[in-house]
Each structure stands twice: as structure tokens, then as C-alpha cells.
Image 1 (tube, rainbow, N blue to C red):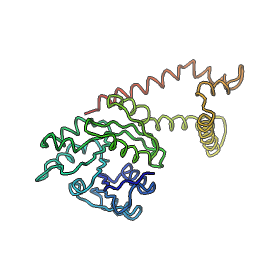
Image 2 (image 1 turned 90 degrees about the vertical axis):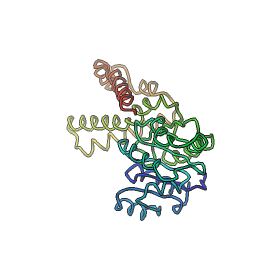
Image 3 (image 1 turned 120 degrees about the horizontal axis):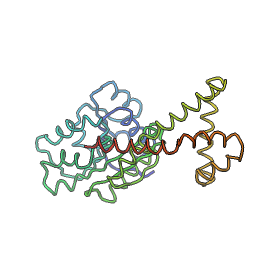
Image 4 (image 1 turned 90 degrees about the horizontal axis):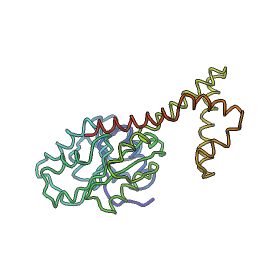
Length: 283
């Protein structure tokens, strides 16, 4: 993977902050000595410093000023205070281009611009591009799916830098910002839907008299196998489903129950509800 000859800073040492740090180091995107991470928890900083060799600090403002790429990995409710403090620094300016990547769910690009750009002239604003990202939790095991949306100041090179970082944790697609609510509902919340299906299948196995551990093994192996089959055969899920569903067979009996209860429609309805809630929460 392409090496970035830049200082990368992470504000926030929680699970996603650690996912970014681990991916950046393990993929060789940057040397540990050029990766900085800040957090209020010195314990978390110590753990990440020892694990990945990154430079830990408790000063968000210092990290922001000295890094070329700053990844904001704090909770959405912390954004206002964090960015306001950064923008309120004495002699706040942008002498060199600095890329800001935010993974704060529901926090719009406009909100980030309002907080960081207010005291900057247009020239400095152009040197502070913002890219909003919606990752998901499988990024913790380098199997994530992210959607990203750049603001008008981000160059093609800077979008590619963000892509390089995100691809170290999985896959990424660029979207218009208006589509990020759908991305949030589909892939951001998506792992929870899969876990719910897994819970249900395990419960069914137990209901049918199987040992809980055996039921879990059967379920997980089946899901992994089904995904691999779909990826390698390059066929649609509908085609593959029909191949398993013999007329009058056991699978058809199951689908009569699912279709009778309109399960597909309910799943679509649930995901649309998640997207609508994402819009309501966006600031």
C-alpha cells in the first residue's frame, strides 16, 4: 500500500481511533513515529503507544497544529467543544494544507466548516479541506465498509489519501453527502442486522434441540460459506437463493413462512427507518 510521507494525527483513542491507528501501522501507510494520537485517557494512550508504537499526547490542540492529516474520532456530542477550542487558539491559521477527516456520525460537513472556518479567510479555508466518513465496526478487524464525502476544498490527491487510509481497514466508496444517511442505515448499522440474524438462527437451532455451541458453529460457518459462494460465483443473491430452494423442499417451507410474514418488506422498512433517523440526528 502507498506510503504517506505525512504526519497523521488521531483525536480520540476509542475503538475506532484504535482501528485507524492499527490499520495505518500494519499496512505500512506511515511509520509509527509519524502517527500521533490524543485522548483524555492516559491509560488508553499508554496501551496504544505500547501496542502500535504511536506517539500519545493529551493535547488535542498541539496534535492538530503539528499534523498534516487529522482524523477526528470522537463522539458526535464532543465535536462542538473540540473544534471550537481548536479554532479559538491564539494565532489560529493554516500555514500549510491540512486534511481533516471526521468519522463523527451525523455531524455534517457544514457543521464542521462552521466550527473550523469562521475565523479563517477564504485562502486559509481552501487549505483546510474536510472529508466526512461513515465507517462501520468491522473496521476493527480490517473488514470495514466506509462511505466518504469530501467538501469543495478537497483535491483529488487528498481524496485519494483518505481512500488509502480507509482501504487499510476494508473497502470505501465515495458518495455525495446527501447519500450518507443511506450509507449509515445500510452499512453503518448493517452489522447489527447481521448479528440479529445470527442470534435468530442460533436460537432456532437450540429450539430444535441442538447444543448451543453446535448451533452457533453451524450458523457462523453457513454465513461465511454463503458469502464466499456469492463472491466467488459472482451471481446475485436471488439466483443463489433459488438454486437452494427446491420445489416442495425444506427451504421452500421456510420461505413460505418468511414471505407470508413479509420479512423482506419489513427489513427494507427497518433500514429506511434507520436512514430517516440518521437525517433527524444530523447537525
